[in-house]
Length: 328
Image: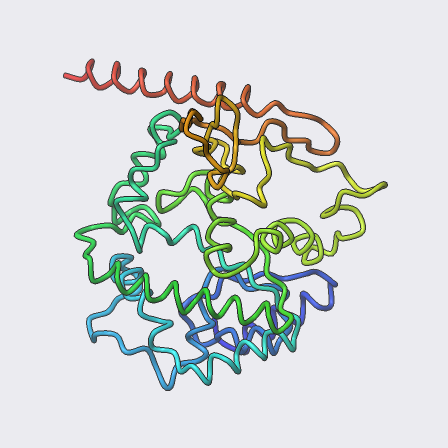
């Protein structure tokens, strides 16, 4: 999008009094333009490092953004190419103009560790065959760009994550509003699981678990302009709650619908830092997980919903096997 086009869009949005969120594409405008023109929030990492480049991206001459193998392979180099001093200034500008940042760390994680992404344990029971097929390498499906993915590309993405996470942490430290999102449904990220992983990655970025919970609740409410009714456990607010087996401040993995590995000490869940005696019995077990989701005051039993999804996936897989076997 060109600057004059963005100006027209933002002017109309402001006239209508609506909030705006952007996924900045590869275009004339960057985070600098969006911040100056009053966007409400920026999603992902795009546009921020671009605004901090000294000149243009240092990519090969045959680079094609319409080819997602090129696009995502080279995207992992953006933050390393950004000028640190200019990046600090862009962050300052975003804070000054009250632009929120929803980094969505989880959606790109496969780029830094493909084998991990392809072998997530909940895939066994909950990955629908249609989504499994979509995730496979394909030039037709968005986000299915893993053809010959190399250790060098993963190393670049790991470096990108370090710089990107530091930038988000700096942004928050200067007063910027950080929220949470996952963009699931692509790149080996599943609905319901991607958002819990996002919380873990925000902790990896240097945020305290309590800050991460605030990003996912109160900060999101403020960004939406709904902080008078959601985002807090408070009388008169809408009852949107999750009831968790355990304390997420001790382990954010407990918020994963699949649960988490926990330690049993003499048959009871205990901290893995608990003092141990010579006769104590220690075991590993699966625990945690969300027990209830309460939406608008209506409770939903998550283990029951999980069983229903598991059965749905099993039926779809059985049908696929039957259909395939019946082909001539």
